[in-house]
Length: 249
Image (cartoon, rainbow, N blue to C red; front, top):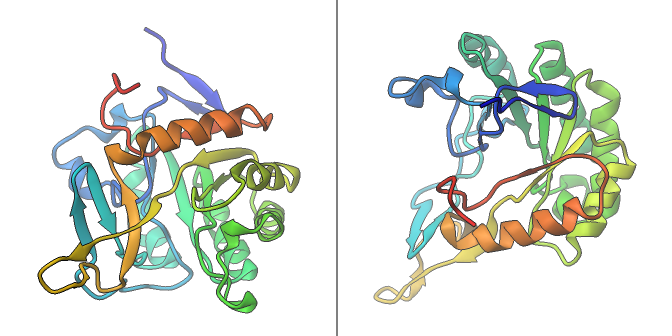
């Protein structure tokens, strides 16, 4: 069976992609699985410089998933290009780099570096606080999403995909803003904001109080948002969130 697809001008051997944050940089899974069988790998979120992440506890189990508050722990974009990208290039699979920034310029700088390093697609995580606008997350404002998209597009020679947060009032408005600003594709969804309380201590389980819920519990939310967005935009949409089997529906 021929499972090849063309997504935003990039050829995938099949539509199975390991989502950002679920697969690290592939090294650990590569010991147990041939990564070349995957259509693509979206690597763990990258920032302009190294981040150690949030203090523990930063994982809380739920009945149908987990809530994480890892805090974008990563070695930084330069270390990724030097140490991780060459390893990933050893596999016959599409490499998608996920970026997170605190300013529009940070996003643009990372996009330029990764584009020059010849990743296949840049995925822009807009679920990050804009430090120049009082900490409001980029992804909650169509204007901010448009600014980030435009800045990244101007510095990238590879397709740009905007990863949408479900924690907004009107997801379609955000998607249309990304498309209008030049995004080549949309990915949806990022995690859903959640919280757990320890009934014995009467305190939040996570050190950071809240985190992102992922796992089977969010699948119906993801399907609804992908349907809404795909019916609103003309660019391709990569669906994710809560997928645990090819038979999920």
